[in-house]
Length: 179
Image (cartoon, rainbow, N blue to C red; front, side):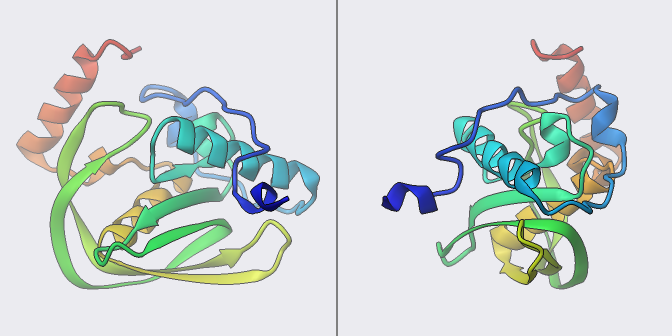
């Protein structure tokens, strides 16, 4: 059965946590149990990300303050990157700092020009506890940095300054999903 290798097929779509929920501001706990519960969580995260048409999702965004994220994101050459990282560490960011459009499933419908490095390297583990190193450029580098921010209790809006920050926060306050 080939479909078993597609992430999220066996997962359950969970509600996405929105701006205002304290779990989004909570630093994630290190994962210590690499058993079936973690594998189920990752499957649920993929299912939820795909249902929401996202390119990345942190465990925080489904209410689990754990250091785990999933991604299905192209780089600037349209190469598709699919995977997950448990207990990730952002070990390198370099290259040019670019301001590009960035949004978040926890702030649906909102977007702002956010500065990020155009290259990022993340190290961590798979759901089986095997070491993994993920390198990204362009859009994919932005995704890796964005998801790592979530695991530290951060959001892309925290990287905005002045008027851009105030504008997005005003939009968030007026959004129909705002709490």
